[in-house]
Length: 168
Image (tube, rainbow, N blue to C red; front, top):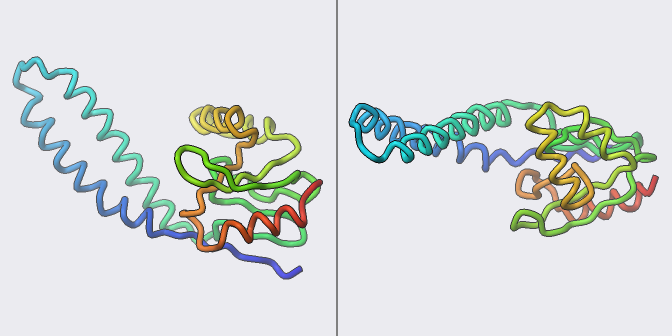
């Protein structure tokens, strides 16, 4: 089997790189103008501060994703190398893959890859990622959830390939 390279679709991240600085600028400007006024809008300032922190995180993450030269996925004789899902487990040997399917999750279709021991993948993540992956594991029984909008390959074809080769 010739390796299949699945490239990243960076257009989502490129859009965020444009929008996040705009949001940061206007949000910071609003905070600066209203911070020293003893207005009853203190809760709005706290909320906006949290949103600004989220926008800053999205900006940094988007820059990292655009600069990442690795493909989103690579499918080879050895298995599936995943570098795009939240878990980013790297190489998953075919013997550990039990199947895949496309299912609606968080409002849009997602490619789900099922593995034999998903809890071991969750335990290897940092605290924030492990909490998010644990939620995915509870919701869809796998921490490997791939948004087809983040890859430049037909998700249905990927699902068929994984189901044909997998079933460890």
